[in-house]
Image (cartoon, rainbow, N blue to C red):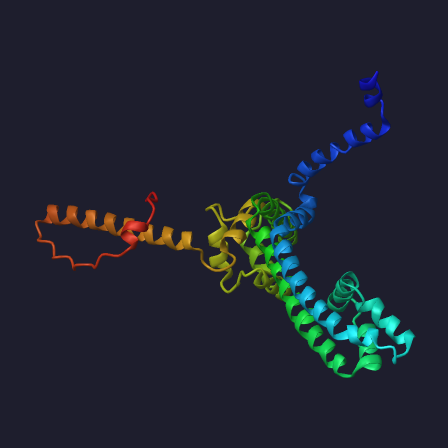
Amino acid sequence: LANAALIMNPMTLRILRLARLVRLARMIKTVQALDSLQVLIGSIWASFSVLAWSSVILLLCQMLIGLLLHNLLIGYMQDESQEIEERTKVYRYFGTFTRSMITMFELTLANWIPVCRLLSDSVSEWYGILMLSYKLVMGFAVVKVITGVFLHETFRVASTDDELMIVQKKRAVKKHQREMDKLFRLADNSKDGFISREEFREVLSIPRVRTWLAAMELEVEDYDLLFDFMDDGDQRISAVELMRGVQRLKGAARSIDLVAVMRKMLNMQQTLQEVLDVVYDQTGQTPREPRQRKPSSMDVSLPAFSA
């Protein structure tokens, strides 16, 4: 009976329903539209250590300053020559350790003006200078540094999360594909599904299109050369060739591109040397002594590309 009552307990059923939230948390990593939420949750989870140490630093500083103000103001609160109303107001802020800590949090993170005005007008104007100094050091400098650390942790999580990088890369590829489809429809005047050389020149002659491509880090200087780079040899560019060509040519040269070019140059040099050796063997000429080349680090670090 006890077990049956436990199973039928509505509160127990509600708790079991909360287990469904675990499935929702797993779905966050697979839904592309929730990448911002994934960054937020990951940043909060990764910031627990920063939150702990930041809280320790703030609590220690506020505790020291709060105890100092309590000891400085206890004489005023016990002075019967002062008005009871003013002493009561000061007591509400600094009468006990708990009140002092709450007031210090208010001075650091909330409205510090009422406390500063009360101490400056009722006790001494020197307390106004002390409150301003505390606000500048703790409420501005220290809190801003802690905020910067939290932002740094957020950026670190966003830049190292594998699932998030995959989602963002897929989103960038889809955005690039939509932009290239728009450019392809604009250039394909014949509506045959391909861009000819003349259509390519015509669309790139539009200043707005050239500026748009320049904003994508693709400088258009020689129309024919750019067409040859994208064309596979059939003298026309398809939508896939346009998308891949622009994606490959835009921006600065990548390291892998430079390494591939250098490897092909070395392969070409080797092939040329073999041709020269065959020519010298057939003609009976004596080959010239090749000039010695200093060893380079690229001889070791270059990957094995095919010729």
